[in-house]
Image 1: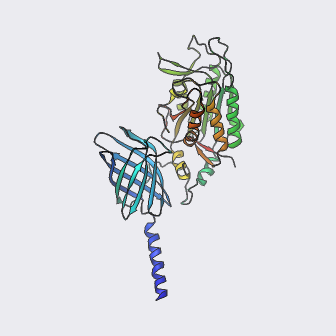
Image 2: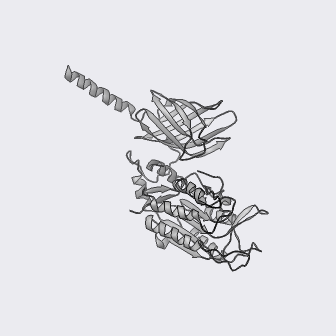
Image 3: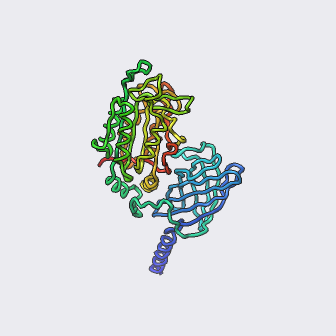
Length: 399
């Protein structure tokens, strides 16, 4: 009798393990409530061990949205965190879900996601979805960067792949302006050097792939962009950093960089955001990140955006990106930059092998706001009309 009980117990455990494998994969549908509104909801889940990826689509009478999520399964709890919009119509945000699994039904709540932002802390609602199909849905993000094993939740395979790819950088610092109408700056070249030191010391940027321009003219900048367009390949990653004067022109409704040979009285040597964007679109990198520590740097952004595991990093890396991080929006910023101070500090203090730009921005944004005498509010988001598809630039830590 005792042996029989043991055998029954073992069979029960085996049955439970077998039934739980891949039970979340497939198509789920139901309803999501937000205040007095109810949305038809479709969720596609791909289960890989304890890691979950997929999409959520919510459809209302006048508004709707669809976005990617990452998550994990723990016992009978399912945690999903949305990461990026596929499309959005109306006032939707990127929420976090906490669900309980009961047979073929997932029920729970959604609300504020402190990592990805977009939802007010008080905004929340309920969701109830039922599994309609257990067929594993092939991901639309089908670029095979690497094959990820079931237990590769920390991104080991992505680290291996990134080690085979080049990281290029164009670093620009402008202190000296001969034109009397443009004040000389003290810090940009030093700040640019600090960033180079952080990239080459802590991350896989090699000196031979870094172009450092000190006090360049407009022609120097155009030549550098042309060279990158002919050098950087589709597998490579590119970081562009600019520290110097920026200016906004109300008549043209556009921001400009001021090269060292610029004149405040004439726009002929100014470098427009439109030209910069066109070059960024023309350079066929996998990911391009623009970091601008200049007045009115945020004018190049399409939208504002505000800790991923290895699976999430892979999904973000699959999608091409053209992102910008700036020290402010449509405002002036000081010569003594707290933006570069905390950017370099966070890059240096990071211990993770993979670091997304979203994480960098989230970690140091409030440090800049709280320590800026001029009330700087850093910005991060996609560059308008430059080919961004929702991915992110991933920094790879040196061994």
